[in-house]
Length: 476
Image (cartoon, rainbow, N blue to C red; front, side, top):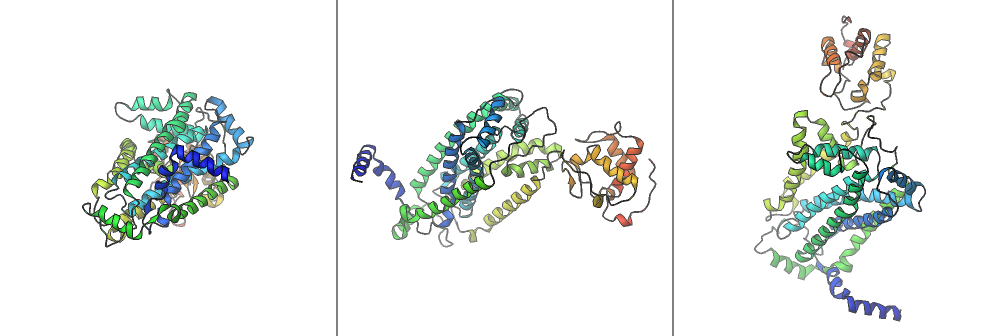
């Protein structure tokens, strides 16, 4: 121990570690900075997990062509601890996104963005979008159908930007379509550029925290007044402040340890994301599904009328980023307590509810046809009539169920047909099927008159009151 002590003293004397790092660790924080304040440090811990596991994966992963998929198969099935490392990297990304959002929500609820911490919030907003960029670029590196088609969709969205859209799309894909050059480009962005931005952003964020201190728990009788806040804050710290290390930091250590254990447990018991077949851009039956934290956005886009798609695709991310960024400029003084800011609580509740509802809706993949749809079971067909039964079979054989849903069976890309008989009569159904419509092909040339009659017969049974349906002429 004496020898180790001498070595450490020599290193410390030359490096100045104690003079620089220890004052940072021991900076005084409010005594009431308790469990609400662990999400920021946990997000940083999740990023460290991503760096460590990412470095390990990059030593084996081959970012090019067919070799990328083969290297992933090797990492998952044969490399020492490859299954665990890849799983931790996947669930670590999920944890990092979730914790970043939770941390920002807590800061918003407590109005910790008010004077003098406006730049703390702004740097956090930038970090959030860089983290989402990390999550998006990481999808392609799995080099499966989901990753490839997600990038193709993103490139198509980017191409809608006026004047420079084509250049942005070409830059993203490294050419006219997704290929080996796209993978190499995304690998460089994911491994070098975005982590570098995160390191720089985290450094700035931590420096601002050390400069302005950690905000206290909001109290109804302590509104923020920029003219007096700093003096009042320093006075409260002198009375009730405690050193961050070790008195306050133990909660951060406990929470981050639990988070690491959960990530490791998910990696061991649930495993990394499964490897589907290698990507094939010629396969039009691919059913792409982005990572779950993007489902809500794709769900929103799937519900839009065509004339609004471009405006929302381009406007929502920009307006969202600007809206978050200027929050401290709109209100940097006044009450911080949520009890005095019910609109803040309402905003969080509405936002969280919308996210959950849209995410659940997005799980159905309403933006994409379902090419694996099963035949309609007898309890859904609800008829002994051979023509109606065959009409139900034709609905699947002709691909209608790829996009349309009947009592939970089928896709969600097109309008639901569960009660279509209450909305359209026989003539209207015939016109729709024969002529087609937006994103719906015409079936006039692919259906015989008898098949068309049988399909319409079945659709007319789809009503809320099938027993009360009046008999009608089935001739066409």
